[in-house]
Image 1 (cartoon, one colour):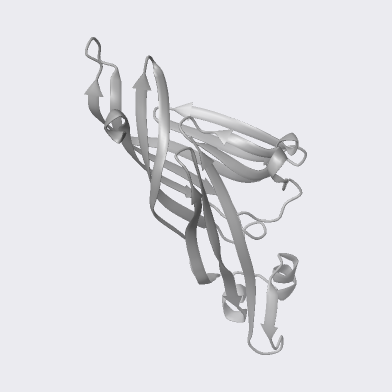
Image 2 (cartoon, helix red, strand yellow):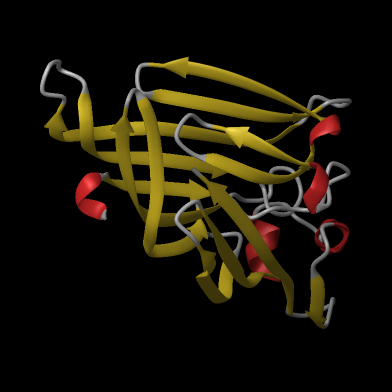
Length: 225
């Protein structure tokens, strides 16, 4: 079957979510259309403004709170490479291609200006053009991981990234772990115990001595084609 469709390698990155007034249930979640991929967000569509921009091979989406205009998350999809396998016999229209596409999402998982966490998945896509109609299929996720964009203030413990479910048209990627900081690490960034507690961290140890702060997270992102 796959001899009739084109293959693509897709690199995508996205950030695990944080609590927000815009968080929604499954039925009302905003779905972003990034051109090739569609990404289900955690936000209620009626509470969100999305600003799309397109240039060259990139599509960007900035997701903002409708009432405060705070940037909640941002995405960028970039077609990095296209390797054509077959053209139409009577034109230069590609019928099958290998594509490398990067999709990135980023925001602060806990509180403003705390840290940014990136989840990176490498998926394989197949694409086919029939009678001018383009179709894509998700064959599988080659690898997936997540990490902090910067180090020094927070680290990740018990990190785990996995594919929960997968069909040819959608997949769910789950990330879990514990965001951790210490008195010394947080203090170097000017972050107090009170701020950490307001972000949902659990404080362990003596406040007058050494202490640790931990924030468990568990998030799932659904991707469609």
